[in-house]
Length: 487
Image (tube, rainbow, N blue to C red; front, top):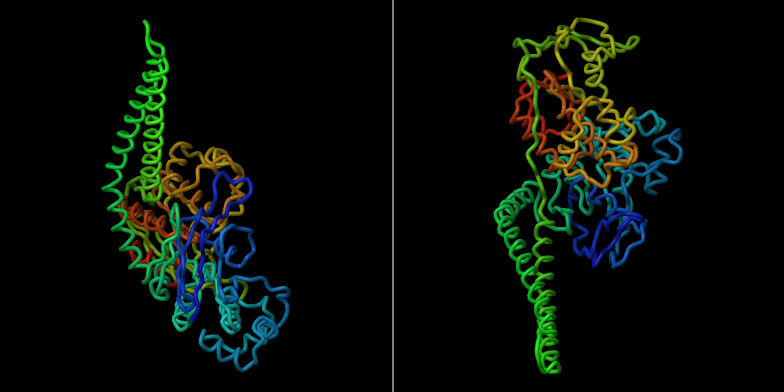
């Protein structure tokens, strides 16, 4: 057991308007299972890179362990999986097989080329190799992204048996099941709280309510301080003018008196300025979780469409068979299943982008659809270009992004330079701008921070849109879905 100590850490990217971290200090134990959370763009991955000494910084990071980052690159994916794992962990084959067994993996995949493995199988193999390394402290950067529900539960069960890692994740179920500490990157610092996500969330909600109650008083204090500053400035001006009065005066005496009063005025001005800065700092460290709005259009009838005995096959391989459900007003239908079960393919069939091989479906011709794709390959240009191309109101679009804590400094940058989480927020904001009868979202929460996920749940529950969606966040599905379709 040893400690990781971060002291007075300051770091900023070249050309950035402000630092990512400013004089940040925190401490943690190497046996902790720590969840690292924070809004998109706050510096979660940057912090991991700093721990890995990949970026230059000021301050100190003291640790006796060897930091290892996940995911990591494989130089030749055509090699057999067993050869790659031997190279990565330096262990015997029996040790590798024993570890993989904990992840519910068949040993036969060890003798397949790594390139043939599914995303879930790759994740499990690479995690296995990392945890077999000696004296390693693991930095796990969203390890369950794109994994199906079954694979996620397997990885969760595995991580619960391990110690010594930092886990970056936006999945609340994962953070609750696995973590015993939460490291939260806030606007102006980093907090460390003992407990899982729910314990952190309870503390966060209480603090936010306290800050909300206090914010109006702080704003009044700032107004009072501004008023005092103005009075002080007027007083200083009068003092200076008093040196140049009419008639016969002792200018030496008046000058001496004026200098003393000016010194007092400047001292008071400095105290007022410091008070205002302190008050503004209190405001700037609060997290904004504004309510979003959605304007779904009411459809003319209760039934928008249906799916009946739908099937899809590629060559002789069946993807899914006999899928049936109705699409009615107010339904929020979650499409569930393992990776490769055809969830995204079913969505493409409903959108007319793919043809089924069995059964039938119908979505009425006058149904307006708002779609959030799993892919972001077709997004480019500035935000104004994107809004114009999608015929959405630009001011409303920016207002929604702002409520999702999107950095306004990025408004003029090309979207293709954004992070995955920022691009996802752009896609979701576009859909929230659209007046539609049916909202179809394909894995909308990938890379989206926890606070924004809560905002999206709240807006959906408040406005009750008709939805069909694919999402691996179990908490979101439990809170939102009115019906589940298993593929």
